[in-house]
Amino acid sequence: MQRYFGEIFEGRAILCEDDVFHLIKVMRGRVATEIEVVSNGKVYLCHIEKMKPLIIRVQGEISEDRELKSDVILIMAPIKGDKTALVLQKATELGVREVVLLHTSRTVVNFNHRDLIDKLSRFRKILKEAAEQSQRIHIPTISYLDDIAKLASIRADHKLIAYEQQSGPTSGLNKILKSLKKQERIAIVIGPEGGFAPEEIEVAKSCQYIPVSLGHRILRAETASIYALCVIANALEN
Ligand code: SAH
Image 1: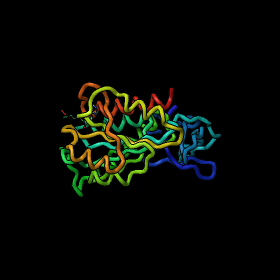
Image 2: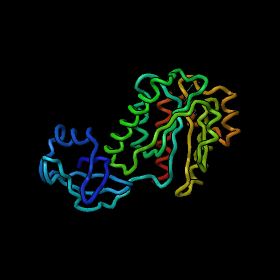
Image 3: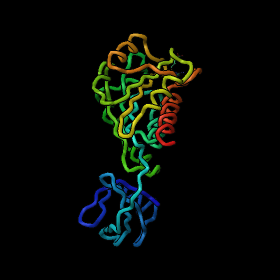
Image 4: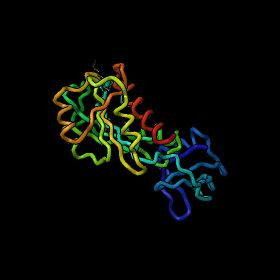
């Protein structure tokens, strides 16, 4: 069943223009078509009551919760081409709660004042669509940090940084994941195509981030992000 994120007001579901277009033109919604609408972390079963003007009536609340029991924060350097968008989509399916794009010294993809807003709004659309597709009740947030020292501003109970020079056994990562408690927040930092400069790892350590290995091989940045999130989600859901 198609899911949308919207607002519930006086027993009716209110969707944004793009979603109304999708429901009526793409999904060919008609009177009695049922949809799920997520609002404020709750899922509602609704149906189209009237086409003109469009009235979507709430039938009742659906109790379900597919969210991870801990908040996972992916902090990643933006990477080239459509790979950042791919990682955002996969991270959403894997339950991530927050994404922070982090500019590092070897980041090749440079945002500037003009395109940062456009890029973030494009990324927010990708996060919303992936959250609808994977039946989430939260759309991951996305923000931008322009300096690795600002890692200090991230609130998390466990702070990890995947460091390629530390490639080897993943025992460090697994030990931390075993100690993870419900409701705790875990942040993981993934570098750009060129990796991290040693002095950046020192800055991260000064912000209480623990360098971890993601295994013996050197993964591409997009693989590293997806791998790390798979391991974390699996540890939280087993
Ligand atoms: N160009 C670099 C690799 C960068 S990989 C080199 O050849 O050394 C991009 C990012 O993925 C890294 O900054 C790191 O965050 C992560 N990564 C890749 N493989 C990893 C591994 N085996 N252990 C820890 N982090 C890894």
